[in-house]
Image (cartoon, rainbow, N blue to C red; front, side, top):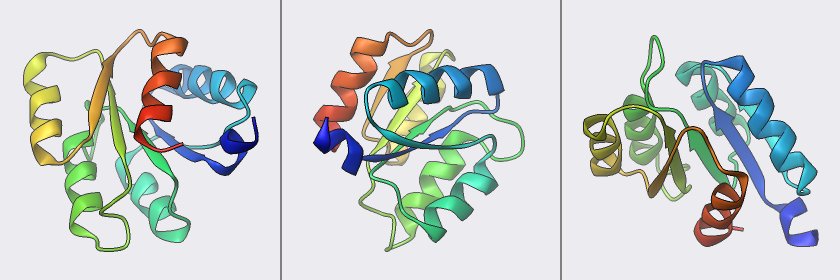
Length: 124
């Protein structure tokens, strides 16, 4: 539990219900979770206080997860933050996000055990 408390997670999804479910499940496991419901807010939060990992939806209005990934990777202060794509979209979007620099992905609907395993594997 102690290592979970040091792992700060930023969950980014434009669907508030998804954010609530992610935040609740991860906080129950002892993680410190912040949320953003769009790409611009996510980038502002990353710049203000870089998280240990970003959980990122691909399809969002305004700024897609692919664009957010690109911005994270281009900024020297955030370039090494692991990015886990969480997507229910087609393979093309996921492949584009991985090609842009995301570390891994899981499919929606999210299975909590799979999510926790990926988080532990990537950073915490």
